[in-house]
Image (cartoon, rainbow over all chains, first blue to last red; front, side):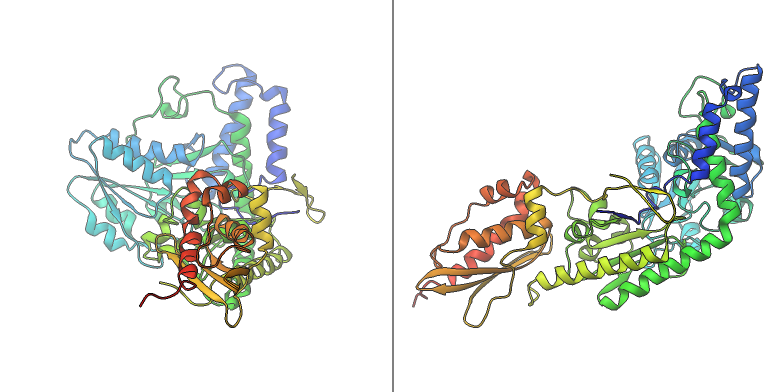
Length: 388
Length: 139
């Protein structure tokens, strides 16, 4: 049985052009050197890395030397949060984040709490948005960092930060944005956003897994304590031999994302709207998150009258993520949707449908048919009188 | 196995991200034999698990004190649905006022993981409710 892949927010299959660039790098004997070596082989590898750095920086309108490569967005988020807070000398330290962050951010905050750092977790509005004034209201005298997702990985909600960055800069508070889901999907200009730090992923936009990047503002440059120690690569913040072919792949993915941005964003927005229009007539379908202030590739819905696990099991012709799966091992459902104030049963019966470069109108129409059939089957199976 | 799209030439993963069900559970979940809402005069008993929202309603056609046909309406996880289908088969022929089900045996038969056993309690609770309706009322 062919399975339709609607889980690009989890990982978007590498673009063939990305794979070709990586293969070419891996098989080019002239690039086989360690990028820190002084000979020609090292220089060639270094040139490839610097080109990729410029390509990544280009997508977020940043100077190339403000981007450092990591193993992925999770490492970037950890380096940003742990690195920035550990680099401060003040004994009292406070961080502001939200309850709907990716587990990478929540995990890093939990570690900071174990290290004695106070953390405020903001609750978003029912549509998933965090208001800038709520962030500012949570600021304390000892606040050193605010960390927010630019685009939520479950709902696709895009945070409108307004002048938050400049307000925080005026207070000498760092702003970290987790843009793993936002890069290549929504317009991004780090200066306009006022970000001091920004975490990026490659495989969310058709690049390879195993590589990511962290933007670190050039001036004023935030102090960061490295998570690992050894070599002086990546400004001493990420020691270790750079994975040249992975970095080349990320660079190519970002260059393609920049090149295709306008057309791809509009097409994905249209596709997710088509998906919504196709399943909404089933009735009892709730769209989760702000309907327009969102990344174009994600649609998150909750389905009334069905169990989340059964829904996902019944949709085995689709590769999707579910609120039930997100809470694997618990009956609580998606913590993101619950934080947004949604009913726990609906949080469990939620689907994240995320599209990508290869998604087509035909696939979307097929997915609508599959979802409709399964929802009708499960609802027909249920008791006709609501108990409890 | 991965599939190559004829249209785009791109490879797509040939697997679902959903947690795989055991083969017997998958079969029963898909076919749901004996699912139904009963008919006029059928005995009925229902139960709800408020924690998970799972609910199950038994519908029995009772003939001379015996469950002649058992149907179920259910909302819950795939293992609950599969177990209800198997339980319906096992209930047929049993005395309607005092039927017995071995939930652990049901769970084993459908290959349900141990942590799912608690999800199956509504089968028993609903059975007891239906059975109670078949016992003479005490004055």
